[in-house]
Length: 252
Image (tube, rainbow, N blue to C red; front, side):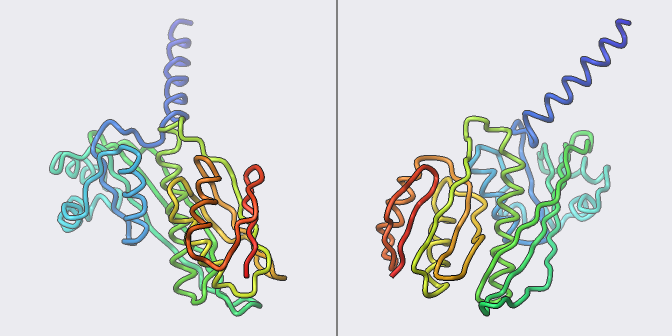
């Protein structure tokens, strides 16, 4: 009976640990992806959240090592060697994949990108997590649409890795509704401004047509700060109001 209780307690602790922290922040982290843009996005997010991440110059040297090459194939012994050789506690690897961009009725390209992520503890090559993130985006060219989709997928991956580790940073859904839209360029400019504003994540254009566009995103903080930034961005828009989690914008 006592043995059964102990087993249940161990399982409960394990499950609780998974719920509270996906990627621990108690050691040095190396991130190696097959795409430089996605890799940089995740590294920047981890660093800004307080993780001790191997920086770019050292990372490029590590990538050339035999341990890293084999670790990327999931070789347990190589993962442990990687940790010992470079003082790394956690190893994150990932692969990107794209669907062929498609031209829509507005002569814009829609693209979908997927990013698979796995993480390991290097001291014993223990597998910690695995997840696939997908995102869709619109652009003037297929390449632009793919780039935007990949950035969004990488943002989702970063949120997954660090989100539960920082429960005080709660992101809520928000949206910007643009009216009087005569050119997608205006929508794209607002999209880029929101995407680059601190606290914004998972930014995407979810609707465009009939003179209106809707941009949805996750945002941590006072939405009025973002609205003020849009007002002073020099864009051909007028920020009409902020109502709850929605910014209303007129274009001209």
